[in-house]
Length: 514
Ligand code: GAP
Image (cartoon, rainbow, N blue to C red; front, side):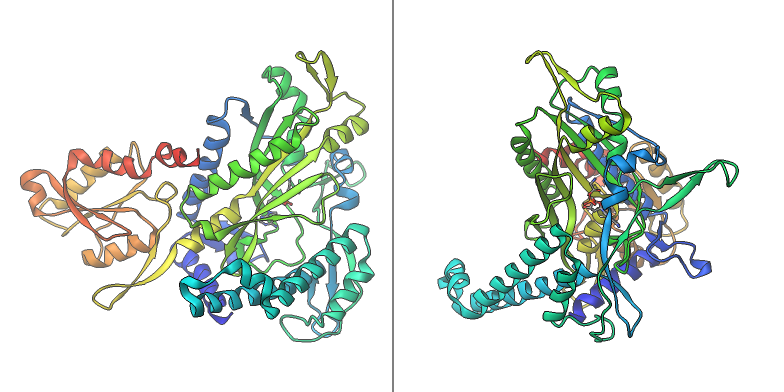
């Protein structure tokens, strides 16, 4: 656990030191759970967004984009259920005065049981070697059976209590499991209460005439209220999708996990409109498609798992999370929800306008069903960044810090380094940059010895370093060093563009998603 915490601290300090993420308004001591993306972070974030957008919009002729406003008519949130039901169950510790999400306390307890079971399985796998039968072990080892059964029982009971709004039982569960304040160990808890997560704001010039608004807590509703506008103006035929990326705001109770749980964050959502009755087929389709998209980035299959929901949101008839192995364990990265016709029907009812599709094949009107994919851009950033950050021991015993980002997402694709700051080498380096910058983000660095410059680019995640030396002046060749292998090749300057492109092009990476 201590190692996990150290790793996570390392991720946060690396993000700051190398210009990826800063605390918001830091000179005023920051704002809790709000962060700014710095010069390298903004590039990495933009590349993740583009990788998603291309795979969703550009690669699917039946999915189009949208950029709806953050401020929406307040009735939107009444219709969507957010005013009445977008709550988290919170609990306060009377001694420490700290506030927690009651469901998260219980889920963390259940997750610990799962980890204990995993540890037993790993130990046995090492002990028995090739003869190890994991399935048999899971079903027969008393300790593992007990851990997993208890985990299941707890998760099911939590799902039931939350589903029934039985907050007294959530508190009873916390007491029965003897869950203590993670920071102080105190078990002196208040009752569990509901807390609405939407931020309010006002529209209008004077206090009397101002209208109460909310900052949107999800981008999805901007898509629903525009469903018919897009369908008609784009002559879209069902099944079709509308994709959107943008900011969302939630007044999160527990916001201690860096950019994992923020109060202002960005979502990448796609609502796929289908014929009623077809939704389960599309739900399965999008589960597979979205997992493949994640896997294409090469962060390791073992770092992803599906979690099917026991407790369904008020709008869903099926829901699953793609969970990722973050530095603090497996947590939700993306949600895939079969949202039925809940949202469109609710907007019909509250607006008095029809939001129906005329199906020419069936010769009838209906309210489409919706399958949603929703991934947090900041969570994607954290998954990619934390998994890529490595401390390596080299053959000569020295160590290096390398950020082995998927090269398609790297903020800078190549750094051009003159071996020395004289003899015309900087001029050649600048000329190379002038040529490459039309296609790629490239950087110039002439400070310090070349070895230290390599290390700096490794820590920034730059896939290539191009070194200009005296031989370059004679034969127009340079060395190109690969970040991950540290291998260096001598190549012609004229070949650089195609070598870099082969490695970083979105086309090549997106091909892996199909
Ligand atoms: N429209 C559906 C929806 O908003 P959600 O599961 O509440 O569903 C979708 O959110 C995704 O948004 C999550 O899987 C997560 O990646 C991201 N997300 C949600 N709350 C977040 C927060 N406070 N900070 C960062 N990302 C968040």
